[in-house]
Length: 258
Image 1 (tube, one colour):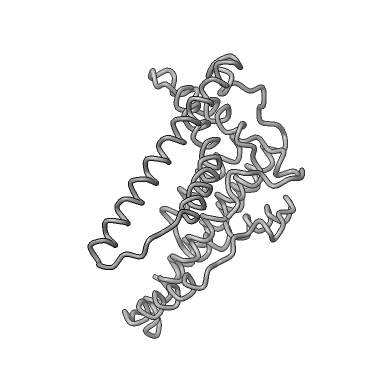
Image 2 (cartoon, one colour):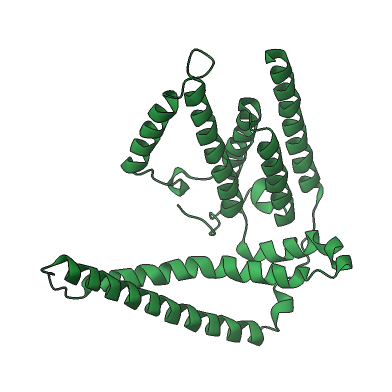
C-alpha cells in the first residue's frame, strides 16, 4: 500500500488545507467510535469514495489483497456466524461484517489524507490547530516537529529495511543439521538485522539533523503560511451535514428498531 507519499496531480481535495483534512479525520473517527452503525459507516464510505473520485486517485494506488487475508476473513466470518444472535441467527456474522466494513472505511479515510497531502504540510497544520494548547504550556511546536520527522523518516526507513532484507537474502547460507543449529542461526540473523537497522536509523537521523540545522532549525518545519480558505469551509460544511444526517438517521433507525 502506497502511504505517506502523495499521488501526483492536483484537484480540489489536494488543494485543501492539511488542517481541514485532519479535522475531518478526527471528527469522523469520533463519530464512528460512538455510533459505529451501518448508516454512519455507509455515509463515511460514500464520502471517502466521492473524495477519491474528485481527487482522481488511480486504481494502482490501492493495495493488493493477499489470498491469506481472504482466507482469514472467511474463517472469521464463519466463526462469527456460529455465535448466532438476532436476526435469524446471523447476528454474529452481521457484527463481524460491520467491524470489517468499519476497518476498511477508516483505512480508506487515512489513505485519502496520505494520497492528497504533502507530508511537509502536516506539521504546520498540527501546530496551528494546537495553538490554543500553548496557553497550558504544552509544547505543541515540538510535538508537531516530532510528528513531521517521523512521517518523513518512515518511508525512507522502509526502503532501507528492504535493502537490508534483500542483502540478507544474498548471503551464502549453510543448511543446519539440527533444530538447535537452526535456532542459533535464526537468532544470529535476527541480531544482525536489528544491529544493521539501528545503525542505518542512526545514520539517517544524523544526516537529517545536519540538513535541518543547515535550513535554519526545527522552527522552519512547523512554520507555514498556509491557512484555511473558502474551499475548506465548504468541505467542512459538507462533511458536517453528511455526518449529521447519517447520525440522525442512525438514531431514528435505532429508536424505531428498539
